[in-house]
Length: 360
Image (cartoon, rainbow, N blue to C red):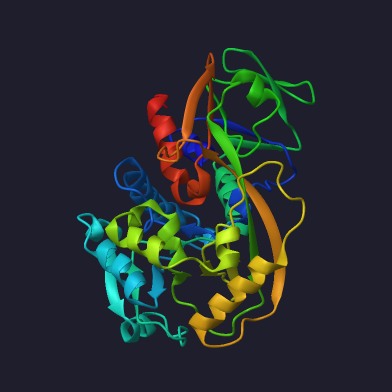
């Protein structure tokens, strides 16, 4: 997205990528443009601006698969209903597109929800793109500009002057500005440049199914997402946390349900959160079994066969109220990392802010 902003503003860009194709967290996530759970203030403003930019870029690059599908969070009892009701009564509820709907209304919005629940929190501002292919289509559009060069299989190793870096092939690349968008890669050169970087790494597990065989017209979350996202903080959530414990598996793995249907009909489902290092090297089956039960209870039908399981790692500011860590680390060189689980949602607006601050 930083490359997109620079090219859109008339600059020439060289993008250096460590691998042959990017394999970081954004490739592995839900593809959600997730406005609904964001904290107020800067975080919500960033998410709403990013939502506008995603829609605009999606019109220019149809391959992104941008879909303004909204989201539903079904609730099953009075405690969960109270949190949804409080969210729908927020002063910024209209900006978020919040609405509290009955179970029947939720099924009109998303007929695939045949399971048992009392009501649902609706957020019409949420959207989705295709995470596995978004970067490929963005790159095709950038290359068509004639002002973009992609250099895969190279790792930037050293800052060697104003706006200049050396890669692991020994080549030096110079520009008016260098943006190091390193994702969760926080060692090596990043540690040398910023030894006390206020960013941590987080690991999560996810899965994807075979095609559902019918359309899931919205993304879906469960009430555990209320516990995870800052927009839902308040007395109602405090009561939920005090009076209704998470299922043991969900609590042990710091879980919530998020689910989005891919364009091929499969469902991307997650997720867990692991914060303590060293991270496990393997994936665990209990969270997958738990998520399967939750999804089947909402859909009222068996889940299609699971075709893919994976783990990913992303970078998150240790001060989780910060949208991103943006820092000048040398003359003409900036480091941008740490958006946490907001990377896919907020990336266009994060890049736009970088471009504005650098005077592009």
